Image (cartoon, rainbow, N blue to C red):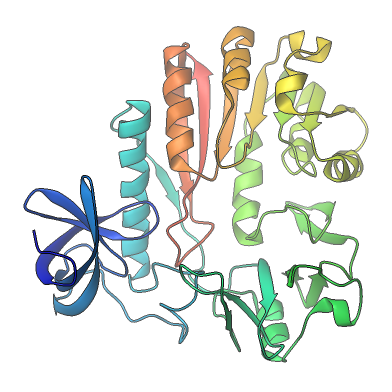
Length: 380
């Protein structure tokens, strides 16, 4: 292995979580940003740790078959996208590899057959967080830095948001409530742009249903894929009781309500649960509570036919996993933004008596290595 600052030759094998390519030199894993599977590179060693090293590309000696020209002039500097140097099919293959590896390593589950749901590679993103740069122009955080990169356009944004950015828009505090930390969220829908600090609520339509939400709160960033996800989470399901844990503003609950006699929606963020009451409508029960606390409540003692969970990146806590194992709903729908925590929880559920009924990778974030999944489990 070369010493720091020296160059080495490396063949890239695959993309790993975070978007770097990985190859091996003298049996040690070496991670190289902006590399592609099949690349033969001359790379400079920049970091060595126990068991792995990092390097930066000096020259591409032989490009891999999936390598492509980035579509954005800020690519490489901007902290947003990290897979624009791959063609779209190669991106999907990389994400499948990330998911399969996570399921094997963290869940002990091999040979999962993922249904891959693609997206428009560009112009898909409805929601983005912007920062105010030194000159007053908006931008994003630079790659591996807290500095702000001012940008004049962004090809992954939906047209309304992209045109708004290209118009030279500034901080919304100049027209409404100031964003105190120099950053804010903008949400584009149709021809409209909703701004955190200016618009208290936004309204969008998904699957023929209207949903109100706070532009500064959490709502999915890609409505094209939400149109595919929300019905899939609820398709072909009916029964006496269902629960939507981490329900947010009621995206899944609004579809579940039609197939179940009773529905319980749980969300700890009070503003979101208030909006969920409006979005879901009558016929559901709502609990403004941490999920862990709710699992100890009388409501949680009921027998559920179906439970859908959409946890944060860390996945399900130990108490929630234990509740699922003891309450044994007939089916569990799991929506995940992190394949590693999903795989860990899947391994637990399989040991608790469940089997994978279906598994989908939904490409919510083309040009980025982020992986979103929907898995349905059923009692074996």
